Length: 123
Image (tube, rainbow, N blue to C red; front, side, top):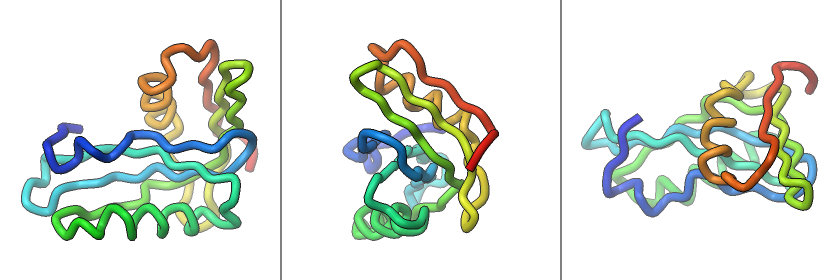
């Protein structure tokens, strides 16, 4: 995924603490199909994966040059006190995200964490 100036201000990761649903979002610039960025968004207050995606979509797409696509979802257990993140499960509405891509992004954004892992098990 290449990046460009229209995507630089969008943070790759926004996570709560604890156990919650997450979605993997692809953002791209309408004028340049090679200008894309993957985002990990997780929220403890979301009842559905769609709640997270729709909230982020409305914020990002308020910039009319950008479009978003939900690539799937799952669950995250985020324990900052222990420096651990576990990614697993799936979204009934969006399907299973590529957890390995989510973990790549998380490792880049939490380099001080001792354990960031994924599994396709569970819901």
